[in-house]
Image (tube, rainbow, N blue to C red):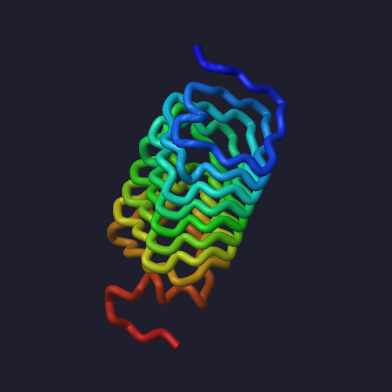
Length: 189
């Protein structure tokens, strides 16, 4: 049976590899916590917020993220693709997600605000109505993704092949249009 934690605040905690396992957190706030050594097993976060936390290279293979907000978090090289997919909902603001993986996840309506998403794997991901607000998408991979109605207008450095990614009614700025044409070796000025 897992330990249940409701409406608690955690400040400046550094978690060990197994310390957080088999626990459920609901309406909890984590401030300046370090999860980088964690190998999550059977952990659930419901309506939780993480502020300035470190998840770099943590293993979150067996985590349920149900309406979770990450603000100013370091999340380099985190593989989200093995998370529990039931009621999966996450939002990111001012996070560094470089080299992270979202392969095959349903991220409908997910918001990425002021995030670094360098070399992130969005392959076969459902990004319908996702918002990429002022994000660096350098070398992010979107092959076989569904990005219908996604908003890329204020983001930059992306390269998306419209023949390999569903983009119906997706929004782009004129300055970002070159990221849709790069495979054609066309010069846009």
